[in-house]
Length: 363
Image (tube, rainbow, N blue to C red; front, side, top):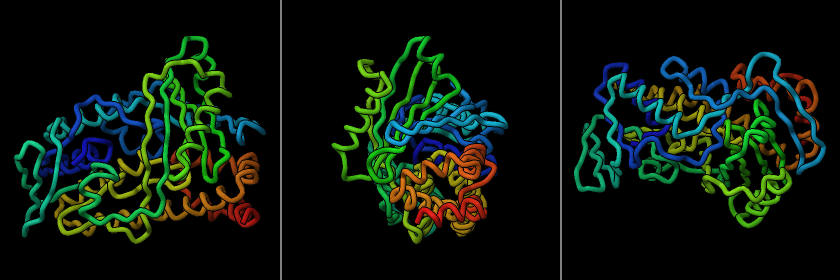
């Protein structure tokens, strides 16, 4: 249930393994999704064997600021750090790959409820019809019906606000291959500019409960960049929800993946890599009929990175200025670079002596 990166990755894996697979998606592809659209190495590695990534830009340079001040920039030494995509194109490419693998994607199909009955799961749709399957994989987001059914618990909820700004050739050339990250004035907050050819995705994220201050941060950030006065193509917001360490990933024959499971990196709030990886793990487990294998795989492969991310977020929230300074050092930049390239996840990075020492000094 859900035709985003998690659901379509699950469908691709299950269908490839020979399972009869159906995707229920309430919208119609290609559809807009509030998202920065920056693909890190873990995402690229997970999808490049099934799609040609429709990248609008490849990032080789990053500029960091702390609430608009203390700017510094770093360049990638070994290839692009991120690939920038527009979610309608990216998700639609994943849909086509899932269908090519044998999955059936039913669009404009909204799931209203689900019930487990013995050895099956029955899903009731908005039109009153039902679908019955051996296993259901919930990939319908953190506010969807499967998260509630599974009893997913969230320990961190953040508000992300974003505008998509159309820009002319001169502005597009200025930002090509370059992104900006600004560590913000609210605890744990930051803002970004992600270039996508003739569009700039500009957004901010901060903990929920500070809506007006978060909106003001976005307005001030856009003005500071000289981008105010541009009518956005999209102006949207969403909540990101991160699971607690003990939150369930399975209840009976229902698995939850991606946002529905609260799987994302707590510091950056990066979620696409967790969606495609957890979705693929869920689809493989469902096809094999070994649902416990999914829980084990997530706990072993994804949960440790989330634990390390919580540690980074805690340090960053309390000492953003010193954290900014740490990123300027060679060990700090290497940590960020390796994360973007998918060479090393945060749980391994934070245990390296230079980074571990720096984090202790920041406590």
